[in-house]
Length: 72
Image (cartoon, rainbow, N blue to C red):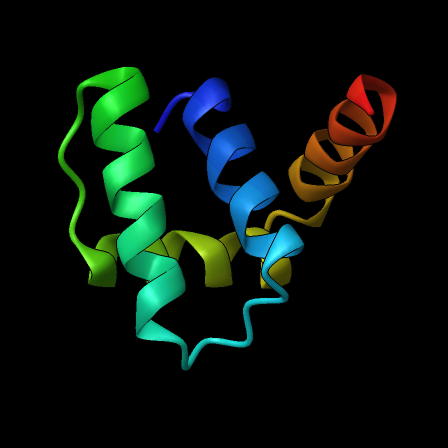
């Protein structure tokens, strides 16, 4: 998954206050990634990637949040 894709995913999930149980938010992420990056990812793949970012790749998650903060 590219940095731009992760940036888009984190942006949508943070705005919607995603907690892992809201299917509508995940559908929105799938559509956005398909539209903007022309990639197809399943909801389960994105859910796992979100979990990995939050738990295992905290430095990358912080970097993404910094980029999002600067863009606002």
